[in-house]
View 1 (cartoon, helix red, strand yellow):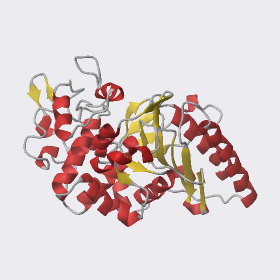
View 2 (cartoon, rainbow, N blue to C red):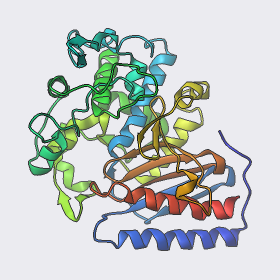
View 3 (cartoon, helix red, strand yellow):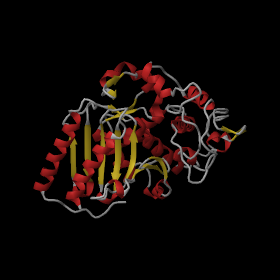
View 4 (cartoon, rainbow, N blue to C red):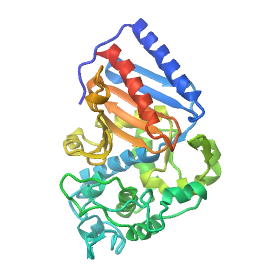
Length: 363
């Protein structure tokens, strides 16, 4: 997925880095961002950049789903998992029962691993979908911190209305329930906790020293992770963050994010032959964000950037204002956070400006 890279002059790169420093610094100075950090890399140009010089680990939120995808591909490569088999065949007995009941028909046992990875299962979203009482799980968490497990997730989902029959053509619905269940599936196959599997299969091989799954054992270390904001208000939800795990509970840094994304894209974590199916079919989930099989694509329509084409980016974003993307046309990796839960478009504004600065120099 890489292109031949133009090699800029050292003076031009220095000028680029100065502009990047000023841009990121201006966002960090805002009252509605906190502990902003960004990192970038272009391997074919032997270029890396990061801001600031020292980094506080932050919650990468749903960017965690890329780790889940990498694990699932590894399990498939080893012959332990078939993406097109029902997820229920790998999960504890009864866990999938009635998570997708539509018109009195329980379709849960037919939902495949691939459909859950691609958010084409139609399963309701336990986290942000509003139930009969008018409040979402997310809204409740913001008011009062509390813990839950996958069994709680299943119970919440059973009380919510599915969006469409599994595998409906051209339909996708982003549901964190899918990835809670995929995390449980990984644990069931491996016979180990999600945290342990991530450590053994990803963190150790890639040497990611500042990355870990935030679980119950880390609750007392919550204040060592960068504070997330909701608007301008600090969010203190250690129990909740220890509960999301596979759908959004990894802690990392921008530079570790670059190392992970390189491992995802260069064949270190799994063979690149799997890219075809991960990236071959895209469904709209949020505006310019589309979903493939376990991966997200940010593809801004030309009408939204009439003066300069913004190249497509593959990777993932997170609700806490995190981004982790690879730009194939530029051989460019982008990783960062603004730690903002409410203004979710803000980090994309920043990432787009960062990529455009690089594009002007690299093309």
